[in-house]
Image 1: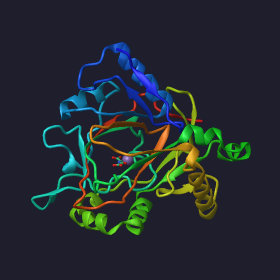
Image 2: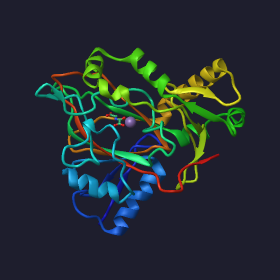
Image 3: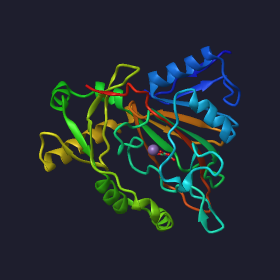
Length: 297
Ligand code: OGA
Ligand code: MN
């Protein structure tokens, strides 16, 4: 099969054409796709028609899948699929309505965050003129490479404390009215608690070998060897650097899009610029990291 890779004007977000993901891909074709995924960090397929089984089958080619601990929004017949949606049916949210509305990488609160995630668009919010609910991605390897040498030196060997308490505070402070309503319906989610966890602020990608920043201003409470104030200032400065336009790809969704992101090479953010009656409906799968995950740089 002739797979084409279309370059975009960003370090990530390359479009892969000539592939029907509902069919079982030959090993060579899969390897080509996997190589593009490892190389760029975000890849996009358009015009796909995927059943939950089809999405899970394709996702599994990359490794074991994570099943989201908060089973409330797992797909009713396929627990490997997390439903991301603002739709309410019979008075009940069918999915997670407020997923990822801050710059983050998935499941940073775990000791071994997943290799990556895949989102498949079933419904995209639109008023008929424009499309809402874009997802933004920033390249953590391109952003690292572009840091001045003195900053690279400053970051050497440092650990960042990722804090669930800080995340909840940040989330409450930045909630929109719509997601505040969602929050009440989804109150159960807040019963979950994850202890603080440290990750290296610079990690080596296990497959590309590139150094990648690992941070999220919304959740890092401290950097080792720095006081709170210095930590705040450094994380704010680093995040402002990472989200510069030259490192960012903004995905405008169409129904049938499949977007995959690598959780080491990229962070992402959902743009919360829509609410009901504009419906958004996505299926997400989450690929666990292989035993040799990212290493401290
Ligand atoms: C996620 C996520 C972004 C989006 O599902 O992890 O961050 O645009 N989603 O829905
Ligand atoms: Mn996310």
